[in-house]
Length: 258
Image (cartoon, rainbow, N blue to C red):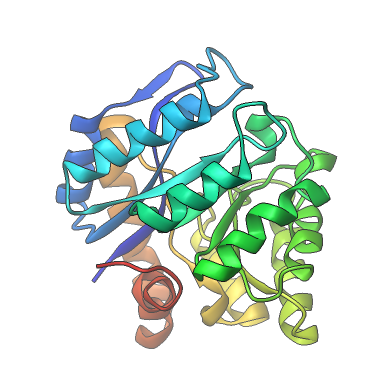
C-alpha cells in the first residue's frame, strides 16, 4: 500500500490542481490513499481565493466522495469570522474528514497561538491528526507547531512543507526533541525533501516519525513521474521495513483510512 498524506485541490500561486489531474496522479503513481485539503481556503498567496471555510471544506468533501482513493482534510482558517470551533467539531464528528490542516503561512495566524487549542481539543477527542504547514517565517516555524503540540500531547501533529527549505533541520530537531522528551506526538512529512535528507532524518529521529507526502499535484501533469522517481530512490536507500513505515504503516496507524 502507498499513502500520500499531503495533497490539495484548488488554486495557488497561478496553478490549479484539478480533479482530473489528481485522479491521474493517484492512478499513475499507484497511490492507495491521497489526503486532500482545499487551497481555495487560503487567504495569502498569488491569486488566493480566500473562500469561506465551510464552502471550501464542503467542496473538498464532494471531491473526495467522487474518488475512493481520496480522503478529505478540514482546512482551518484560524481567527477568521467564518472559522467556528463548534462548526469544526460538528463537521469532524459527522463527516469523513480524516484530520485537519492548519496553514499559518497561507491563513495568516501564529501556529503556536492558544486560539488553536480549542480545535486541537476536538481532534484529541475524535483521535484525528493535525497537519501543520510550516515555513521559515517566525509565525510558522516548526517550533511554533511544537509548542501547540505540547499543550495537546494526545494529538498527532505532522509538520509539512519543510523539505528542501531552510527550516528542514529545525523540523527534524523538534521532532527529535519531542521524541526524547515524550511531550508531543510529532511527525514529519517528507514533502519535497531529498533522498539524502530523508535518510539522514531516519538516522536522527527514526523512520517511525516520518510520513510520505508530496504536495500533490504541485508539479502538474508530471507529478506522478516526480513521485515515482523519488520513491524509487528512497526504496533503494532504506531498509525495506523503514520504507514501509514511511510510505504506509505510520499513516495507517494515525489516520482513520478505510
